[in-house]
Length: 467
Image (cartoon, rainbow, N blue to C red; front, side, top):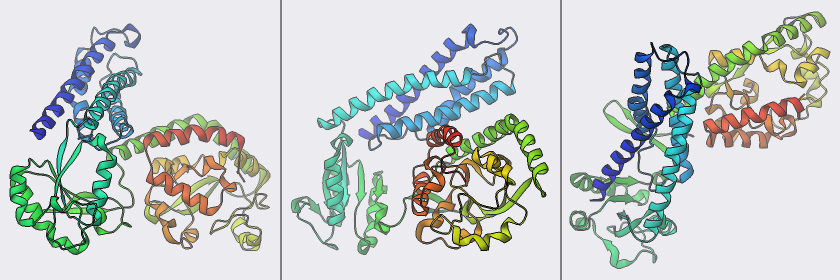
């Protein structure tokens, strides 16, 4: 019965979202302030925009998990998925409007997305809060059968008791005595594996949650088989493979299902949006700063001998090497002088930095003061070597000195700015720098990228930690 309600709720949300989206589209598209040159010849383009709203938008919601069960999801996570879906939808709508020369204002797709997000988000906050209140009072519950009766099963029970808003009701435990029982698990609620078919038939189980030790791995096969026969989903806690492993992602290896253990699993669509923003942002900034780049190039050429651009080999995503571009700020023999200046290094770890580096030219100091020398890296962004936001790319010799989890910072495309850039740069120790990069990777989101980009501007103007 509960699974039937879940399907009904799925279609109800989709129908409600479609009704809201269509209503807002019709109301906004006829606003004079959002029109362009009238609609006398724009019927086909408007119909295409309406098709995106009615067809593409729900598919985006489905792909980003907006309609997935939110029972164990946080409100922030729910609204984050909704916001990401609307951001992608707005980009699709904008692309269609531009391609078909739709007679709407350029900001129409984004005003539409923001309006619909406000309405749908408000509805979800209300429904989310009401459902959690109902579950706390004992309604809208799901029957959960825990596979195992040892310490891990006790942890699962404690977690369920700490979250009454999830509405999970434990109907019993299945364990043949292969592991250690704990007092927190009532003995009268423990059943043998042979009792599983009867439990699945009589207790209206909505989910079987596997919480057994590694020594009982063979126990999983008959449990999954019996649950599959009657259509009961099985949830496997992946700390079964060790607490030190990252969360896995389900995938395919030809006809075989797989569990992929990666340091961080980022949403492919959100990464696609990040790449699109990189291209758009890098193009716009390059065009806007072209006069500044030209003046800087002339100043470098006139003030000191040597090329305008400095190319340095850096380590990018997963350690792949690329030539990073910068405006040259040092004298020609800077690299050969490095060995003589190692004793003046002011940074700990494998990084080499000197506040008043004697190799830096007079023009170079001005360029570094306002990070103008970094602007050519926008070309690296367009090439795909870098991103606007991400951990700064290290040199290969620095990577060779990494220890422990330091190398994990290479698991994301490097960027022009990052948490380190807005946290004081050279005033931050190497250990703290690595910690900031890993924090960024573990908690990455499009919203975090925007926040870092906004904070970068005042930090550059203040030149805090620049050298």
